[in-house]
Length: 381
Image (tube, rainbow, N blue to C red; front, side):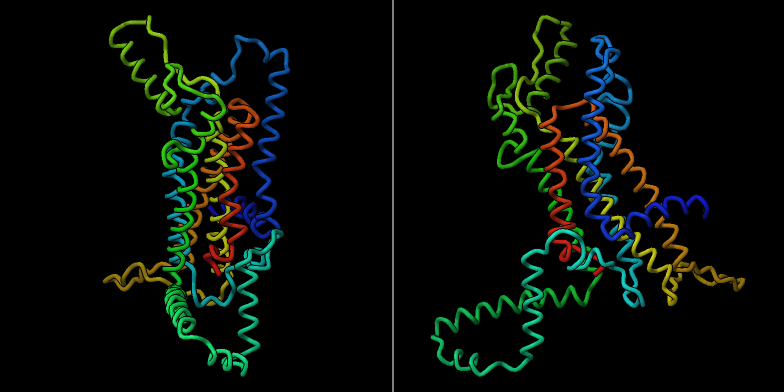
């Protein structure tokens, strides 16, 4: 077990300990898409594969009803949510607040990474510097200015002070309850991710954004009903096929969706979930490594002293190691399967523009959470 665990752990070390890992990883799926488009061009230009009777997308592993697509893409929302929950629980239970070493690395700090800071980060630094220089005593100019203010200005300022006190109260509560802060940040991440995907693919005050774009580019259901979206047209086609099977009538023309630019949902979901999971698992890795390096590791007593006098307590590191490697196995399995599905989509399905737009939408959320607002969403700081 120890020898088997060294190889994946060494891969994680080579990646997560690289100071520019997060920035470089953002280009992984665009590079994979470029390789897939190149393979697609070679396949379509090849004399052997250009045979009309040979359709590689009909192969069992490549078609839409394959095991990978049915159980790993079809249930990707459930798998991703459960993975984030397990990672969050690992960090909540095994992050030691009295650790002698820092869990956060240089890349996750406000000054880390290659991308620019947000306005919030800059304002936070300016405010902290101003507070440190001025101190608690107000300046004479500020005192004279406060005396000359009108009652309306004073009332508005008092309202602002109440609002600031409420915000400071929440910050104080989260500061005093770091585990609640971790849970809150992880929940916000899931809400942002699912709201974005839901608006793009399922509903956005009516039709989803992808369905609106599909109609805008000329797509419609073959029965002529312009009010139907793509998903409703497919459901109508399933009902028609079921009716044909019951009535044994093959004379009815099948209903299908025609025209339009159908943006790739697979490129969106698979890239978004895989990238987010890789960035999130770094939290598990950092907690595990720092706990292993820490000399003053506490112990959790999961058992009790038996009547024979044998102590059945399990050490903190043994429990965290067992859970960490279990999560690592799931992490590798999900990421590999989702990457394979993305590669299949890049080679055999959708047009170039459909895949590029889908991938861009998929990378938007990881960029937003793990780059632009990384200081806010960082659960190890």
